[in-house]
Amino acid sequence: MKMKSDLQIAQAAKPLRIDEIAGNLGIVEKDLEYFGQFKAKVPLHYINKEKWQKGNLILVSAITPTPPGEGKTTTSIALADGLNKIGKKAVVVLREPSLGPVFGMKGGAAGGGYSQVIPMEDINLHFTGDFSAIEKANNLLAALIDNNIQNLENNLGLDPRTVTWKRVMDMNDRALRHVVTGLGGKSNGFLREAGFDITAASEVMAILCLSEDLMDLKNKMGNIYVGDTFGGKAIYARDLKANGAMTVLLKDAIKPNLVQTLENNPAIIHGGPFANIAQGTNTVVATKMGLSLTDYVVTEAGFGADLGAEKFLDIKCAYSGLSPKTIVLVATVRALKYHGGQKREELLTPNMDALKKGSLNLEKHLENMNHYGVPAVVAINRFVSDSREELEFLKQLCINKNVRVAECRGWEAGGDGATDLAKQVIDNIKDCKSDFTPVYDWNLSVEEKIETVARKIYGAGSISYLEKAKLDLNKVKRLGLEKLPVCIAKTQNSLSDDTKLLGRPEGFKITVREIEIAAGAGFLIPITGKMLRMPGLPARPAAENIDIDKNGNVIGLS
Image 1: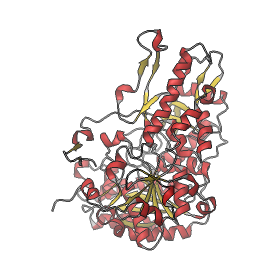
Image 2 (image 1 turned 45 degrees about the vertical axis):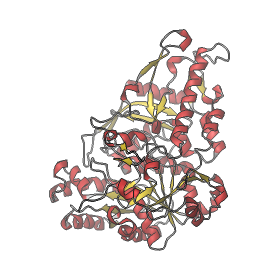
Image 3 (image 1 turned 90 degrees about the horizontal axis):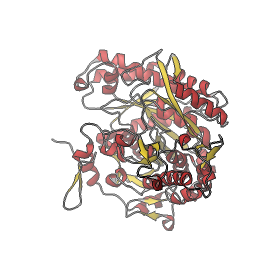
Image 4 (image 1 turned 180 degrees about the horizontal axis):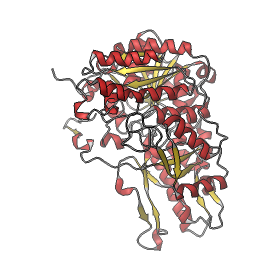
């Protein structure tokens, strides 16, 4: 029998009106800001400090990603449904999908099979307009920068050669990475090199996700570093009087979005930075709201634990006071076999040798989580192609390391397929005796912080800095920003900065190409290897398969 697609399953669902979902959380109907029948924004006054500090935060991360995918979001949704199945009051708190991956290679980010958040089409497309608002706020600052350079009145003396602020759009478009603006004569502005990043990589996105409230958002916007004057004075967004108007554009975007799972359990979806080029976590306000409204919050951090989990802990938690009670590491047999050298087209064939070799990747991620002092549990996202021998090997590996483990069948069975995992998570939470320990001290030098993450988390043997990165380090010191944490931009496909090094590479060299300053967000971005902040589309983008029929039904969305 042919299996239904994710979209077909989502379209066949029978969602409750969003006011019913909200009512179950104690949210008063008049406080909801509706976006149709099944989506609503919730005001920030539902965040209760006393409650969120006592709540149980569950972080879902994963092994190093592979082309077949590991199902981290699917597992997160299944776990939240599973917790509700065993009588716990739980909510899943996720990031919003970017249109770049939706129309590119990865597809959507609303889960899969019978563990999805709905309305799936809306969530994967424009949703409630948050990405659009972030894009507009970002590009308003870009326009104000160029306008100030152009006009003599109120001119700050900004040197165009020092401006690093880029425009953004929520689409993979490699042709816009490096552009020249101001062509066509002096009335069109100064001729200068510029470029575009994808919206998920915007500092405005990072700021939204780390802000505590509207005024904190405004203050952080003002701290965005723009460039220097010809005299060498640093210029910030507040000097351009930009942060007030930027915050006005974001006054609704800062409010978390409430939707539901296929099983009519609450889901909060808010913010969407990538973990390979930004901090890769949903908003602080969404996480704290979830903890204020329920007893258990399941949240995920992007890509592998070396990226999403590291940044979740060392940046988001360190700034916000949040601390997870357990970390779920999602692994699949086929992904570990891929890391063990088995070809992608052969992953459905049992291969114990490849699995044993690839399992070193899982072991490394488990070791990394131990650095933080938070108990981990492994979720084996099970597929029908997995042999019993392979599954038992993975389970025994975890048992030998004193790590709890459970199979998860969320894709095919929803919450019922994650009740065993939910029970293991509850036991892990009981074992958690203290808050997490950051992997580095912010007071270390920038180089020491980069080296700590590279050596301890990635397994690097050495770190080299290109000339541009060395100049950037000098600028960081000149601006007095050495005490900021580091948000390392690195490929998600390897523990190293080389996409071809699978499994558990060791002793490799990490190359820092440049260091971007995100003073508003409150971190520095060392860019390693060949990382790009504006992705490109693959040869056969997912957009080719997406269509709409005469009745307005979306087709081909995944």
